[in-house]
Length: 381
Image (cartoon, rainbow, N blue to C red; front, side, top):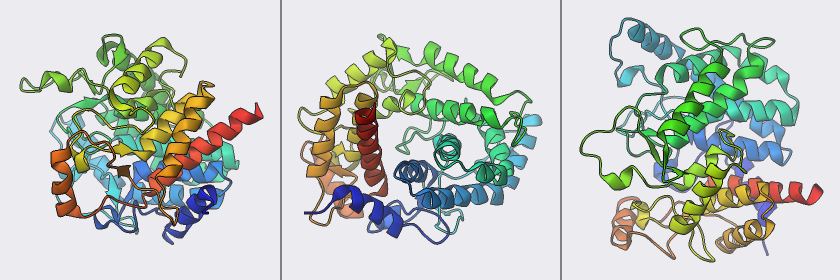
């Protein structure tokens, strides 16, 4: 029987490029790249299990990639000062080749959450690995990222599932909030940070928090999309009041809200009722059609992570066991499973287009490790 915990560590390490980048999935051609979002969570998992060199290599790769394209950010900021509209050539990409270069295709590249998550993961690494030197080495990239995020945080962009580019997303704002908050300790001794308009990053983070509380709450829970700027007139109402399982990230780990806050409790309750299959996994959102809208392993681990932080151990362990049951004989964890799908008519279409569901997915393995460590920490307290 495969030791899934060790298998996850070994699989992640064996699929880290010499550059430090983590490939999203080694067997799924459409995912043969490194996303800042996925990679940052993988790096955090590596830090949690003591593989600090692996985490540092990814974070250093991300820093170098940001700095390689820093000229784009300067061009963007200059356009904004002149009140000229930026175009796609001025925007940083969400994913790169393993060597750190942009991929030139029609993918939805304008995504902001990964850059906030990279700053958050870098701060976690500094604490877990006691690696101040890496933060110092990444100073220019940190400055570039903070200025970029602070200039664009109100802009509609693709969400963490690379959809809905016409809207602003609660999860994305939470990731940016976490990145700016994580950067606060670097204002003085390490980096000397300011937003693009000259403010401390923590001040802007509070603006983002207020925005979420004022514009991303309906029926006493958080919703998937933020009413800033005003949505287009043709946006379907169900897109504006729905939850998304990624909303767990607002508290765990981004801490825009603490996990015990009533608003967070009500949001998780809605996720449970709408998206969590009884005795099963967690869907992304009700209107999901990607590979039929199955149950995602990384989201199941994410909900378990939240439960572990809340002391709801039985619920967390139940999700852990469900994830373990989805591993194949070699211990590979897929992106999602199709036991219960929301849009069965779309499953065959996606399989014909891109082949079988991605497996292994490094992000799934990383979130399993994070959940295991969260439960272990609960045992130690």
